[in-house]
Length: 253
Image (cartoon, rainbow, N blue to C red; front, side, top):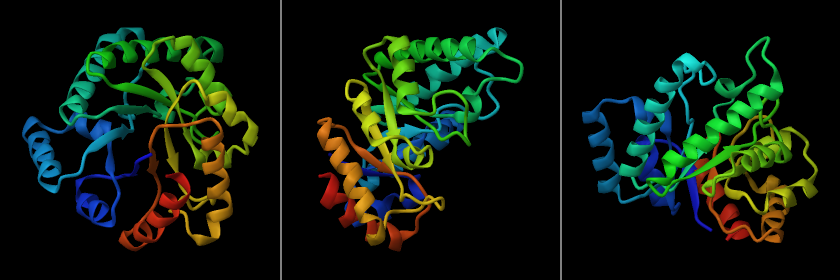
């Protein structure tokens, strides 16, 4: 298992110097900067010598993914975003975007969930051209009403029915939603990526006091023979990243 950090180029040198294996970038940022800015970004990561293994923040917040009249706009965005991800040799794109995927006011939740699963399948087919996998992220109830629990996102992945569409478990969301530990076994077939922050509403990096819970989470992944990577996603500074690294390395590798 490799350990990465959700951040951008400004923190890349610090992340590498501590010993982390990769960066998880913001896909919306990659897709919406200019061509020259993107070229500079690619050169920056190349000069630092740290890979961008994954991305998060799949959709920009102002994109209506359920409006049929905007379907081509959505497709064009996905094509551009994933082609740029491919240029950085990204392997996994996390499909979170809780606000964007939420059930619009007055809409039928079941219809929207089916639409989201169909869109996830379409994204998966586009991503397959680049050898990229799509991980539908389970998000806490405060962030969305589509795909909150492990059970929910497994169902979405099953409906999408594309080989490269799986799920992501973020242990911060898992903790906030008070999901039963046993439900993680449901993820075994589809789990392709994970996120972690400390089990606390402040959503910062795990510390020594969080070790009992972090150790349990690691054991749960081991029990289902998880072989993917894990990204730290939450508030941090250079000191907290340095203190967290040996904790995660000890229990997750």
